[in-house]
Amino acid sequence: MKNSSIIVVIIFSLIGCHSNNAELQKRISNADSIAINYFRGDGSMDTVIAVRIVRDKENINRLASFVSARSIQPDYKCGADGSLHFFKINKVIQDIDFRMGSVDCTQFTFLQHGQLKGSKLSGEAKKLLEELKNK
Image (cartoon, rainbow, N blue to C red; front, side):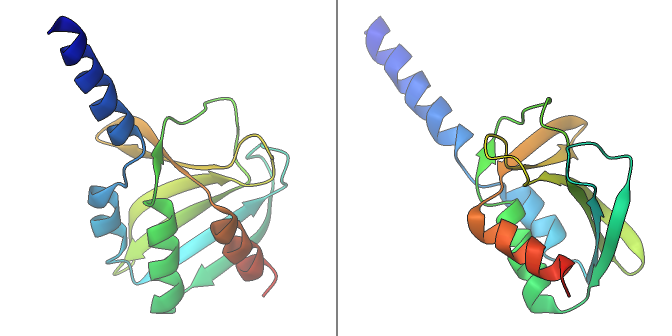
């Protein structure tokens, strides 16, 4: 019985680790614009090389779904290649950093209830961020 309980706890933990973040999705999908800061690309946040403003709802929804798609434990050592700032009526509703320039570390990170959370940055998300940067 004790072994069964341990197995059930492990299964629920694994499911929870790879679930989406519905609370974040709900908050950021209501955004009316996103400011994207692109950093130098070496993981440091000291140099902004490009800024893009996204106002079309299709790309806002796509970015919101990518950011909240697959929860992961964030890696604090990754650094960031840029940041997303979701706005609603000229107020920031969520700040999210992203790392896409490293093969070993592709993630979105954000604060939720005072805790650092993360989600996987997919190849499709990377492609969209690169397309927006080059516009």
